[in-house]
Image: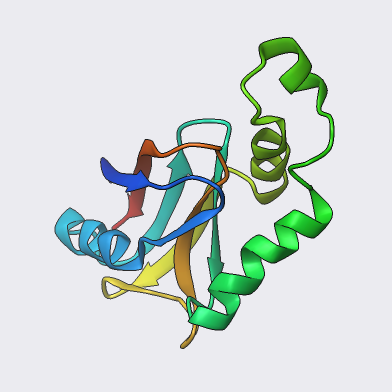
Length: 138
């Protein structure tokens, strides 16, 4: 069986990190599927999905890391072409990736004790985001 649903969120941009673990758990439980996988995919090319320990130290370290490896204050060809100033957002999102697969058993996600599912919005402005959750199993 395959169930597809959507999770909507609003973000602040600029590497805003949103913990969506509870919403994903709810989607899995509501699906009625006992054992399987949930694939999460974020629409858009300036945000990504991953897992982290969602605590204040790492929530601060995560954006700092992106500033070091993909700085905002350098020239990007995308910005020169489109003038929207979010070239760094596209590069960051492509490195993180738009999807994540999490297995579950008895309706419980197989996440580590300190592991949460996050959306990272790298765009340079607030956005309404949609995450597609496709739940497969039996």
